[in-house]
Length: 498
Image 1 (tube, rainbow, N blue to C red):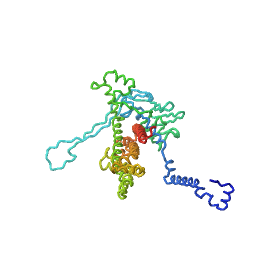
Image 2: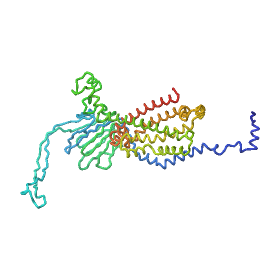
Image 3: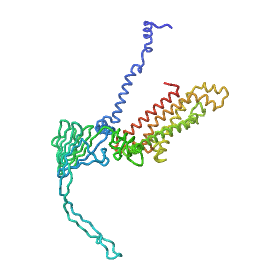
Image 4: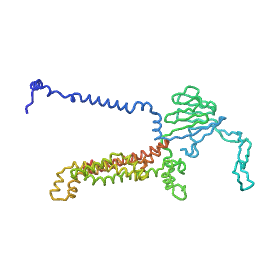
């Protein structure tokens, strides 16, 4: 083949210039695509009000929620009486146990004797009627008032006169009756407390302290270390610690507060803590039935989610398999029947699995049956469509070869079609099983059972974010394991050993 010289190309271009000139699209396709992309992004920014959302977002609260996933709080309340004395109290289920005495909260205690006044009370006592039968309706005339005079009582009790809360190595809260001094690094803030004037700072509040209205509480932020509220009658401290509190043994467990080596020693050679069972069984019982973490219930719900995904996918695969042969045009040569089955597949998969879960929850009630039905119904449509498309793309030569030897229709499908599509069918089913493990978690939140419902319950409390993180980690582990199993099986089915 002869090639044109430069002179010949120039002569052709002179006679027919339109042949060698690129089209408008070829010349400007990249600027047009780039401009269209920019316009689309600008439209999305305006339509979804992304700038307004980012501007009004409360990023500190988002950071606090994330910190709650990997930490826990100890919340002592330092209550301040009118005379300036204080009492330190902890919540009922405090992570420190029934007798908290942390080294980061130091207090000066004194025994005082004080006289308190107990106000008088007035009570009504019924009087006995003269007759047990009367035509007159009962009235207040059948009662008489008994009044007790106010009296004084002398009490001797231990009170706190001065308390210091160390939030971290550089920040602390110093409480002396009706005055609070807050040290944030080199910065200092003085706060006075009064039942009449409320909470008053001695200067303008720094950026780590907020107060909505004069006299109201002042909220102090100490970063990851926690935060505190200063009110006129109490200082509420929220000190944060990294980790998950009492993950193995709750405060009511006899193993609470013990080191790992001590627990192992008690389990192996130590005396029985419970005469009815061994220390090993006692420790396992305390771990599984830990009321804060509910390990056994969480693991049971996770297994329920796995079974829900497996059974729903299995039933969908079993039903989609024969229907796909009817939907494939090259297998069943009946166009109305093909279209009917394909439209049925479209109906099943056009509605999201989440919506089907809501429907089946109303039909069957909350529980795994609703989740299995939602997965089965959605995946039957999706797998049926994929299977039918795979059948329509097979090589007809293999099927024609089986037909040429006089095989029956069933044998033609068995030996001429299945060997081509079976690895694809199994690979797609494995992928959907892996994907449905994640989907089962989502639909569980609407009442379909499994760990999704447990996760949603923990999130609704807006306080148990460490429990949310625990369940998310378990879900991630299961997804990673199933992803590896699914990939290995698909590789073998598709003939790829690597």
